[in-house]
Length: 124
Image (tube, rainbow, N blue to C red; front, side):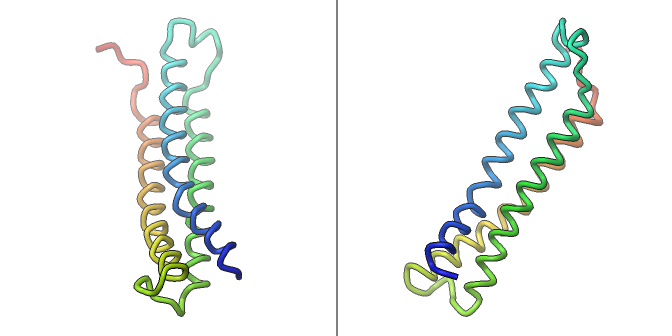
């Protein structure tokens, strides 16, 4: 694989997980707010179904980012992260992406499961 393709995969692996987690969290909050609004029940929003679908889609996208990071790690297996700029940088960022995506996946799953199993519309 060319260095350019490895760099593109490396940036997908590094950036996609964080963006997906942020989007899942914001959209999930919006779904909960829409459900708890005064007119929410009239809209027929099924909170748990929407949250489960959102969590599953986000998890699939983060697993795709993890696959991209692992593909870059596999292609740069002969290089070290201490090597010169192109291969060393790509391998270092792929290691960071593979680690971060596991963390983002856990955050997404915990966020989605908490939104599903917790009481959504509780008055303080």
